[in-house]
Length: 198
Figure (cartoon, rainbow, N blue to C red):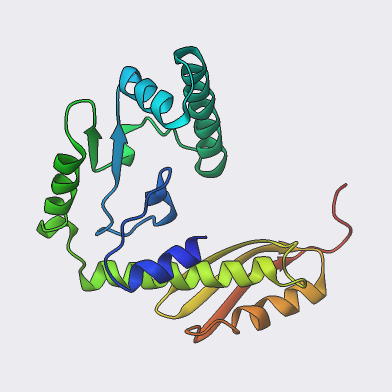
């Protein structure tokens, strides 16, 4: 998912709507992280209208979805989605129209702090390459079971982790080199002798 998002984002302007989506693009300074909120009454009215349900059922659904999203985000990223430090901007739709919210975000994109720079574009390219290599390693039958971490910088990919299989250790750089844009692979994967713990 991150690899696809990076590919799309590097092509030009992109608005990604999803739960803490900015965490899929860490370390990219020109990415603007926005959270949109509304008070419970506004959310209830919207749920009742969109889903043709009553007040009690709407509240139960909202509370269930909120709980599941919190758990999902905690599991994937180990963060609390209510932490304001995750966002550059919080928009309260209970106090402003969608038009005002949209204009606010659009104006923020024009500010110098959020303009792409050579450094931020390089960070995006490094993350794209890292994500693509992680994806092919996760899909290839020879390497998908290995516990690996990937970093990329200036077309040089570094892979760390460990494996109990000499075949996996050999396959890792071969699989990584299949990704277009990879000029060098530095494999720091540790080969563990003996049998894995069960």
